[in-house]
Length: 304
Ligand code: GDP
Image 1 (spheres, protein in one colour):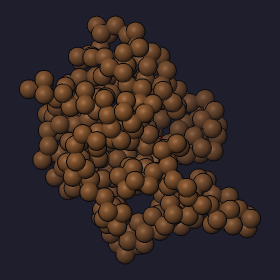
Image 2: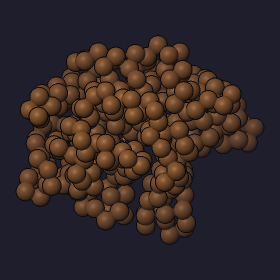
Image 3: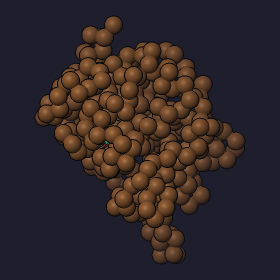
Image 4: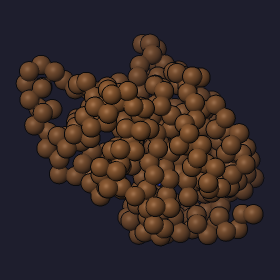
């Protein structure tokens, strides 16, 4: 089973999915367009969340970082006048150092991620979407800012005029991603931010074409006319899409076979460009996540 993932909605689904199928049978292709260098090391927020989920270390109250981590280095740097853009825990930083040290020897991001994954004894395959540097930039009336500056630094408050995925035209599908896509025909697009988490992955050259031959089921991160959390609504509006599950289906276009929308969503099925089905998608517990994952697995059985 292949999943396309950001750092919150899809990892929540993975929590339940891994109760139903073994980790060895799961491959996650993860967004890297929010990656950022912090204090000399590469932080890959979405990849890290997925890795920590599989290693059992994830702080799933916040959906980032390591549970019960300490912040000695972050706070010591602060006292010395260095204000890191993200709160980096000490154990979390060890993973960033591990990844960056491997990359400093000339290895690709994918190779470093796979070695980190092995070091954390993870059995699932966790792959960055590409090896090239790609940055989600938010255009605001004050100018363009990196997604992390918009979301963490400015709390998502600036008006959004546009979203650009800088560097995406040079990004290539890696051999590891190609191999994964060649060995499984079932793809879940989890309920992640369509524009900033899934958008970069499906914008890599040839990705849409390959996905259009797969069985693809997406789960909407939007219920009614608002996302469950985060800036997806504002970003979809800026891109000219309706803030609704139908808008998400429209954005994904012909790669989709089925869109799962929330049972509370009052959208009209006729507004969807693909088959829309309903289920409880609010993953407020692992049990609810497992039920949703089970429903999606059954849905695949109905697709020929
Ligand atoms: P990010 O990388 O931290 O932005 O995380 P993602 O892109 O993976 O996930 C963010 C999206 O997850 C938001 O648009 C939320 O609406 C959605 N989301 C979070 N929790 C849930 C949930 O329980 N159910 C559904 N349907 N969507 C969720």
